[in-house]
Image: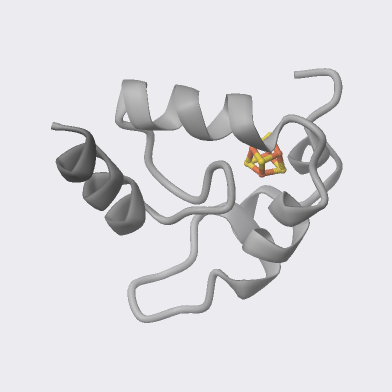
Length: 67
Ligand code: SF4
């Protein structure tokens, strides 16, 4: 968590409104040194919002693919 870039950014960015853009959050994630660990955690724990450069919808797709 100490290396997570999201800790340095306004929290609203990570929870875009329905139909809103997640572009800013995903761009930050792309530069994050813990992206892989973050994504794995979010997939496993069914987190909400943008995690590991993915939306909830994208993570649902990843879970389906893995099943
Ligand atoms: S990859 Fe995860 S830890 Fe890193 S900025 Fe994105 S949401 Fe935060």
